[in-house]
Length: 534
Image (cartoon, rainbow, N blue to C red):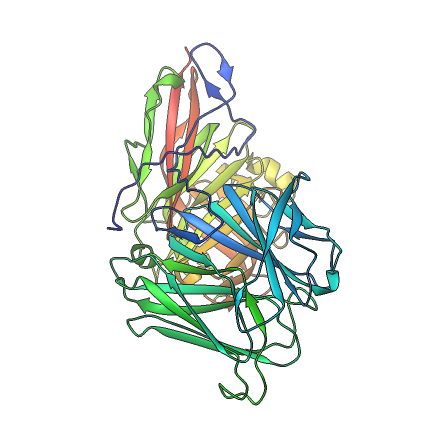
């Protein structure tokens, strides 16, 4: 059921360089190239909850803030990109400000929330819940009974290609010195998967009392935690989001049970448990079984790496798909002086100072020099020892210059033959140089530093002939979990292949797609387009 091809249907546009324009037959025009991505919509409903499949691509993010003696208060959500709606909940204990309260969005619009009494073992607790459209922040300013305010919680619904199914139930539970249980539906799948449960629990106090939580499924999957509450991330009060994870949950499982136990002298404790309110939703994320094990890269349809056309209107439509999930696409197009592939079989990249698995190879590497003379190298570096790991890279260089100008500027060179025929450039630290790890390198970080020698070198070499490309990059961070010693560098020696250079009477355009599937697999596609202008 999960193995499908998806043709993209929503617009995403990323602009990179100042040269970005698109041509019609008559005159240059600002580019308006559209890259479609599959869009998903859902019916807004505050209660009783939600349920989205892996195909839907919906993510629900939780944001919380302690409120006790902290009203007025503002909860920051940030970017509204792809945000559909926000459900907001405010909890009170001991007393409350009345039948309804008002909550404001970032434009000052007000939304009424009605008081509700949750069921369960705790007393004198209430919650207010309402729904807002996309907003960067939520404000609450009712100071009446501020000392009894407990928490503000927001559920932010976004459209994302996240490789998970998500379900949630807006609960109305409370407890104290008892056991409370609830059952949450989850999406089924074709194989085992990871299920993560998030429980936002309010009206907690940092007094050393405990809370015990269990999650379980019919196939025997189980997770539990016992936590003594001594502090809160957001200050003195009063909410925590607890997370429990079960792995290898059978694909046939369609619900999970949640048990919260706060009985005195139980679960290995010698004290009472917390009183608590779970007025907010219980959220489950189910990692799609296909995505969880997916290492296959997205593919391109109707793609060739070089075309010659007479007019921009003749550009072919290129689409992208993945055998497991939707894809998201970043697209750039820009004029270029020259564009080359970096040879797959002859490339050699070494992370000096790293003791093991320190050699990498470009699997589809690219070099581009744009109209102002600056250059870029990008593509996927695969670890020679573990080919499912490595880095997706973007490396930017300043204007490429000849040997004489480079030496005059104090540039360093090695002892390659015919060095006076080489061209050089410094790293451009004003641009977003990037090493994004995948596989075993996912949690590694590599950052270029403006110290020690760093340069791009293009010219003939004994090993590769001409054209040849190499670089020396000073760096810091970690690779394969190993800290890079101070003063170390990354070096590459490789060959250019399939170079296309701008000719008299023609414009050379580079079209660049970065395609990512829900598992985080990234494929880069580069097309060179020559347009005859006379």
